Image (cartoon, rainbow, N blue to C red; front, side, top):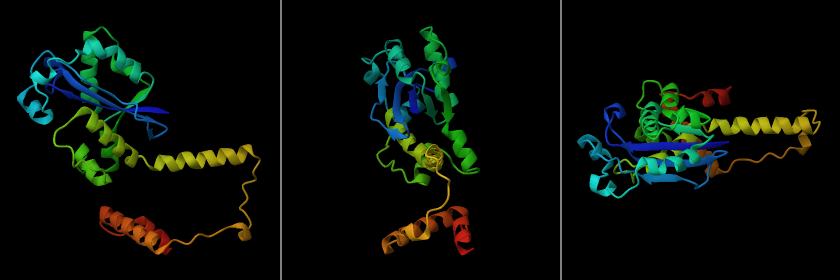
Length: 236
């Protein structure tokens, strides 16, 4: 499974009023593993950034003046994203700008080049209703360090979002592993019966592991503002 975590920086907030993309950053995941096969480009938007946007990304007109125009990187970007699941935080914003840029070079809309688009902001709101779900807030919640993020940058934000996404969806790993084990057992004609008790090796947790486990439990207690379900399950 190939996934691309994508982020953009722009001259302003509205592509319909002529705002343009000035930076695209993409991080590749294959089978939920970072590959290092990333895509990154600064882009000459052929206009100035709005004052508010400039304060966010810090990419000046002078810095972008000698960078390629979007038309020059459009084919490379399309080839890179082709057929992948695209993961974006607040997808309508970035996709709206990408659609506008593709329209300028007579290319079909962004969604037509990819398998699907996943919005992590929507996911986060479903998982954490009523809480702040900005990228910075999610980094704090999932223990992803963003101390080096003085200004927004498309590639840096895509890298942070990739780590946040993997943390948010970590349970999917267990599901995949369980299914694989079940399929393997079925293929091998395994009856599914448990191994004899004498053959089962019980590995006791070390003191350090127990202390680490208790730290995680306390963190879960803090999240639910009480006693987490795991403690209730253990006590029963």
